[in-house]
Length: 406
Image (cartoon, rainbow, N blue to C red; front, side, top):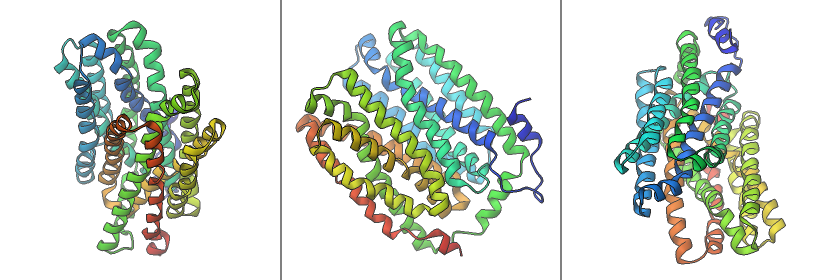
């Protein structure tokens, strides 16, 4: 019997339940987040292979990305809104079933329209998984919402980093048919999420979350809307800058310092590792000191580092990007939990909305910054994007949720 099975069987009664984190459940959704985002990251990683095999234009490649981004981001708030009103724990494994079908279709596709359908299926699986899994992480948090969300988020970060690496090792040398091996990750995700959905049904976590939602957030409607707008603008500022680094950092190093491609990948790995560490740290710090202050320090605190980066030498650039990754990545889990606290009766919708914003802004920013870099230079977009973290000053207008509830 696994630890997750024991958790399902030993779910405490509504009367005696202590507010303890259900670690096997949080760990399970974090692992599946890793698997889900790993599979997502495979798609752009094999674009060069698909372009060559199918003689695709850059416009056709862009259309694949558009279809994936639309299904993966736009649908997330709708899925969350529906499951807030009509709880569907079975959607957790069903979302990964869509991803599995997308992988099978991607490995067998012979025409461009099949590639589009496969990318849509993978995006649909992601949009079904994220809002409901984020809700489960909150259910199982035992009140340590920031830590649970950070654990959930770092799983996705790890998957995004591993996906291109595994694609380079498995798919690129062997061809399109080897994508089928990644179906094993989707099957593992389905098995884990089936057990998680059973825990949701048998435990009283959803009832406790519903009781907490009835207490409200201590704010009026205008204050709540203002806070949500501020959080959306902070997501915008954070992910425009993070997209600049994750997509163009290697090109920047190669152009400015003449480093090799291999060395540029090492610098990128250090930055991504710092993001993972910062994501984990941001959650419990927010639980302890308040999420508003973590958001404030994370985004605005990265501004001076970002402004120094375009003018530093190679060692300074490496050090600054590691510090930026540590500081700035701590904000996302705090932003998600803050938004959930603003609308405690709409946890799924809010989670889907902000994950959708993250995907959407990242995709649009990558395209716009790419065109701007073609028209100017890589150095110019780094100087331009360095100003975006200054929007972190908007966190001043976020309410103090602890004081509001009191």
